Length: 332
Image (cartoon, rainbow, N blue to C red):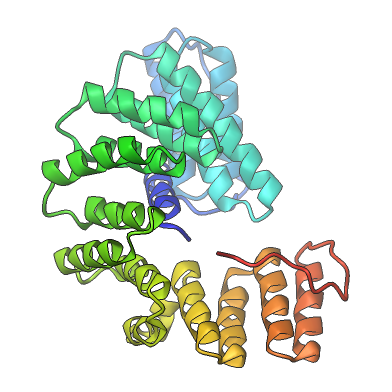
């Protein structure tokens, strides 16, 4: 997982108060007159309670109805956006995930239109837009948030990350450098600048920045990933393994860390270890794409039996490719 994606996911989780998936079958709370402030607070409170208690389907029903009966309420659409983000985080099917992200972006865009200017709301709407793949809208929203609250480094950071994703490197550098200046003790702007240096081919500069970010907060395992990426670009694969295999096994079971370990093992010629590393991650994450990639890695390791088994797993998870295909895509 790339650093910007991870940051988007972290903020998305915060926006929905960390609500996981599920629905316990509770009855929807009644919706009253939207012109009555007390009734609106009751309906909004019902959605909040449903989110906190992991009743996502129930929360969506109430929030959708609330937006229908109060079409001029920014609060109603902001709440609907939060619920749709929760639905996207809970979904396992990629199409359902994207549908919820798009719905969340639309709800947040409407909330921005209806509400007084708010840096926090613009930032949240930017997260939703970027999650839905609309970088142009996300950049506009993050930049507006930064103008509304210029002392908040988060808005500059998110604007810079979105600009970097859009390939607008010079503008991204300005935003990320501003975020760094506003919060010099935070590792995240420095880590983002490492990613920027990596994207421009300055691999040694990327490594220096990644190590600086990790010194700022050595407790965060994710901050090892930019360092590993820079080391890989410098062909220092053993150092990648030394850096990442020092982590506890459970900490290594994230997509970004597992991928870097697997890539380093592959580059050092140990294709079997590379396939095993990615296979362990695939078992944890349960996605069809990871199983397809495991099959490819076992093909590369010269074990067609394992490759066939992983293709069967991929098909069980919804993959529709050929049972004997060996042309699955490879990650960068």
